[in-house]
Image (cartoon, rainbow, N blue to C red; front, side):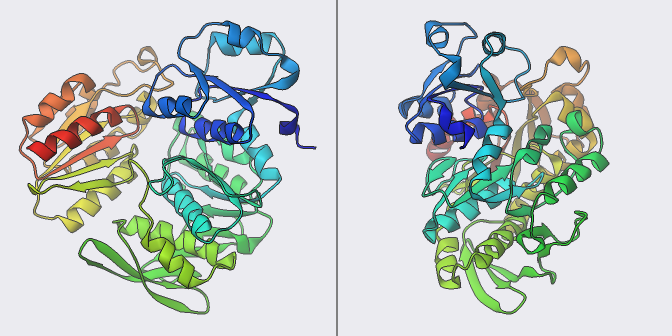
Length: 452
């Protein structure tokens, strides 16, 4: 019997995280009692509470915790939380306490698991795979690292034969999964606080790829060394599955898709960027191999609306363009800025960037500086610490990073003062970018530009 079926109560420590909240929604949808703690009240936690999940924001042992029985309660935590009184209480009282990745792994053991891994592109690809599964009416559930614009959530239940999961490399969490199908989009250096260097993160992805039982059910972006046989995919170069003939017409992207045996012309969607066509190529390869017909896939691609904070774009009657994106690695920022420059080469670009983690800022400072220097003007926000403490990273500040950026028009700001600074600027395109709480600027900016 699945161990998860023995519990009635599920307590999430760090429930507001994007991966944790998807699991919380899964158990809530299954009729279980779901509770949790997070340090910050966000749009996501507010939505979880609307769905009937009980959340507290203070690290204290209240009656809701003391009345829980260890025999019927599972505690799920994220490794991003290092010390917490609530977590200590559960450990000291011998509750079953499992990492998020372990619980997700237990769920995938009992399904045909489609796992999407990669340092970049995994959220878009896994969300697109889920959307295609839904449009094809396959019996699946999905656990995503972003909010789908199509179903307004990071979780969807449509059955249990398949599970679509975003395979997170942080803390080597993806090694707890049981993938039957998998995609590896990229193996760039990241999370060096965990892996140490690029060679070790590449080795982590090889270990993940080794979990897939069938070579023909592993799809890897062409050019990556994954240490075993696999199917390849690419854009604008031949591979087992590839897309080419990309062109743009009235804000729509057209492309042709090639399998080993046929070519399907004129897929069309509104998601910009070559990197996103690459993600679509991987998703189409998976669904084609699951037996979904191309007529269904074409319709599904055409009505895919994307993911919140993944190149979310607004064009206003006054000519201004506002783009909001989750990018928090130099490679991702380069991809976003490159797309903007490709489609709007003459327009003046103001970038507002919030670095995420002191360690990532330190490890990729020169690459961040190079990426940000491609703007016309830059407002650099304070570093969002997430799980880290400034005292452990002396000298690593946004001011230190700003000095490395080769721009005449650049300045530093805290989050609270950023909106007023933005309102003073002259720009054609505004890009807000980062993975922390910069998203709190989104609504005020979107409302202000309408009136500008």
